Length: 326
Image (cartoon, rainbow, N blue to C red; front, side):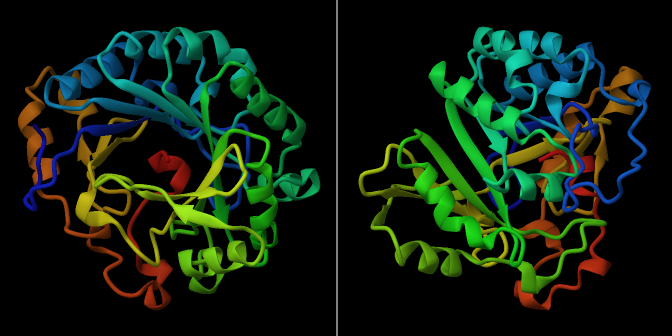
């Protein structure tokens, strides 16, 4: 098992396939003209397979594919085929644009669920946030997933003055659609121009929803990051990921592999551990993995230990979100 110094067991691996993306969301990608990692410096298909198998041998039973946008990678189908053979719960986070292109691979690999990143239900605002005109295709692909009975979650990064006026619109979307809408508090990463006054907290979100809807909390597991709620009369439900206002580090079981083969033991960790270089040099990387996970900070990478209102985003040492992987 992969444990840290605080007794947390890590059985959930998030693998970024690429830092490339077919959208340009301002809070994720710092600049329109972004220098993507050359393919030769990314983990190759066989290397991803080797690392995934090693993690599974040591207790990982859930793998999530992320990016960038994981489905823009040209060999994504082969990667999915390989990981689909492992005894894990396979999931993915995508912007939804290439769901129709990848549907057969998703079905064949028996994906447990798909998370769609979608911050607005309005096409004009979608264009403003993403700087690309794919709204109709994303909505069509959400319908496609639901038609194929694939568990679907919608990730909504809430930002005051941007999309906080759509909270109840998203709740209404769950009335006739069996999806879980997950409201995510806006988090600071390199280049995303984060300020604390843009954060919609869990308390504020619930207060807004309560003005129109009756809801009740659903059971929450020790490793769950999202606090889920059912809405009276709705097929779907909603959840809140309160990273900033009510962190959930004590039950964290997540580790991340960046597309260039760096192990991050926390989303906010400033330190990374290179696994790709020693793997290519045929070193034994298991001790490296154990050491990296053991050294995990108690909370939020050791960088966000104060109240979020006091965080100085400019001094945080991290990658941009697209370069980490969701």
